[in-house]
Amino acid sequence: MDKQTISRDGTRIAYQRTGQGPAVVLVSGAMSTGATVAPLAAQLSDRFDVIVYDRRGRGESGDTQPYEVAREVDDLAALIETTDGETALYGISSGGALVLEAAASGLPVHRAAVYETPFADYGGGVQERAEYTGNLTEALEQGRRGDAVELFLRLTGLAPEMINNARRSPMWADMEAIAPTLAYDNAVMGDGLVPRDRLAEVTVPVLAVAGAASPEWLRRATKSVAEATPDGTYHVLEGQNHMVEPRALAPVLAEFFSR
Image (cartoon, rainbow, N blue to C red; front, side):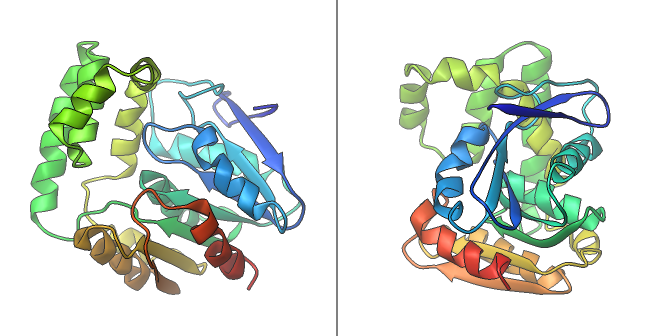
């Protein structure tokens, strides 16, 4: 990251921008930094001024306690202030929940797009989220960052053998380094259900995208996001799953942001 802005609470937010055109801010999900969405930025930079950033507590950005979701919305407000006018937002996974909250908060954005924000569109999701929240809080309070990462990976459905392999990989240290931010994404996700009342307050067009190869519950939740927003559109990308290919997603986003 070669630039920085200061959020309302004084936290340093590191970011990069590339390309020319209308501004778009890309928001990463859990266990990721701005580098995660950089390949997508590269695909959009021929038509847009694309901003990628490290969310607070990650990469080169600072952090300020106690954490509040509103502070991450303030971070987006600070990034938008670096542009010439209204900005479009895109968020993947739990980053999509942050984008939707930002849009509902009245930030000067003209369009918002999300990819597979993992809300649970069924009652059992509340219990699952509550159990995860309790276990995650305990692990982080006790300094067991590795266990916190494992809890998250289990929540995503990663097989035990793959988690064991991840623990032995060079990337595990980096994952542990940002493990405390799992609590941030968990807070952004709320009780885990589609926040229909809050989404009803979004006044800008919303594009909710899911992959055709993703689990059915993710597609259902994504469709529910589109239906809960006053001006929402649901789109399915053929052949894609939660690890969406930037080359497949970029044209869909570009068309939506250019309307």
